[in-house]
Amino acid sequence: MTRLERNANIAAVIIPFAGVIAAGVLLWHHLLGPLDIALFAAMYLTTAIGITVGFHRLLTHRAFETHRPLRYALAVLGSMAIEGSVIDWVADHRKHHTFADEEGDPHSPHVHSAPGLKGMLQGLWHAHAGWLFSEHGQASSRRYAADLLADPTMRRINRSFPALALASLLLPALLGFALSGGSATAALAAFIWAGLVRIFLVHHITWSINSVCHFFGRRRFDTRDRSTNVFWLALPSLGEAWHHNHHAFPRSAFHGLRWYELDPSGWIIRALAAIGLAWDVVRVDPARAAAREVARNDDLPAEAPAQDAGEAAERELLGVSA
Image (cartoon, rainbow, N blue to C red; front, side, top):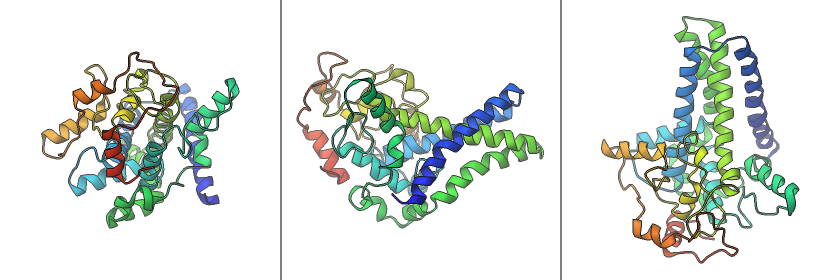
């Protein structure tokens, strides 16, 4: 990792946190109105969808196909979540699935963690944010994201990440200024709430999938890792917190596999399919799901079970076999 990349990651952690503190001061002085809430919600949903539907389910796992303009639009929106450039993000995540909770996983809370409470906290910190300063962006894009490297437009979006990150911060301020009739105060409030606070929340909810959803929660499938489902993170993560389901069936477009497992990202993909904007949507065969279930929801096998044929095929499709 270069010094510039490391410093950029440090800034991406610290600056939004400073924005949250500033937002608290503004809220104390009642500087939060309907416009700020609307802009926050719009920016949160669009950039989070860019990550969950775009970076994750479409580009990383090929859970569905779509037209090139929508594919690129989702890559741009995901980049505006400021979690790294699209090709680096995809390569890191495919490497995570290749070595999930084993040596080589860039953000497992279980690898190299010492026993006891101190080791647990160190592991959780590494999985949540610590890995950004040592492992982030280090996965080989030629090995783990060759399909994206072969796409000239995707390479341009990847190179445009600094500009897209800046736009992600400036756009809320410009919208706040324009929609308020030219108020500099409204522009500042929008910059803080729909810019910094929104980025802070999108970041920490995404990072919680790496940390919380590999440590606390419930399991019901026979998987090779220690992933879990965490119900209270489901809505803010737009369905990503059904993370154990996802590790059991990585290419599924739907992470919520039961009717009560709320999965907004899956709903969006279903809606896109209904209007002809998504096809080849990958669904889990109920018989295959039943075959992978274990006796108790919270069973954590002492030894990793053998890789099943479906999982092996998924890895082969992505070109990331261990």
